[in-house]
Length: 241
Ligand code: S3P
Image (cartoon, rainbow, N blue to C red):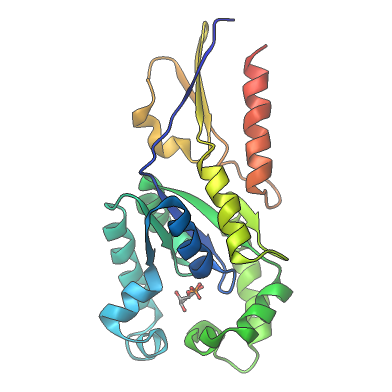
């Protein structure tokens, strides 16, 4: 078969980190930005700079107002290029935010077990800054929120962070970013396989184009970014036959 394999490479595409509180989005994001030579933006910091501390914002204006502010920040950041964005724990679970940030960036979800998250939050000085965990039993609240949100987080390629430091996680993401989706031009048409590729169809030659977006598959359990890459290779090999 006369296949030509072309890499779709957008070196300026943003990298967006989602995941539950305490999974290391901010520390990992900062290191990743340095590795990629990108700017780093933490959406919580943007909100704090403009509106003051998050607990006070929740208390005085309410969670709905906070979520509205988050949507505004997501829309603003979607116009940027070459940024690593560490998002607040629920930001990407809002479909509007997923659309805006997902269109200009590749999203990765940092994943940890409830016990790991509880331990990290205990050790973090930021623990007190998280109004959703301010009640009498923060550990139970972590388990409850994590269960509620698990399906939402599984929509994105997941990276397990347990036993790794933020530098190792950043290295892993940098490698995945350097492994961009491929376009295969075959005699029977074109198939595009990639993570989050459906948001970027405009960049792909369109005639007879089938888009297989492995970043949008919703498996029954969490799927790691490494597994997703394996699926990409398997699909690519399948196309050879
Ligand atoms: C939230 C997570 C926090 C912050 C806010 C709400 C959430 O960000 O946006 O307290 O709903 O998960 P971090 O994930 O950076 O802690």
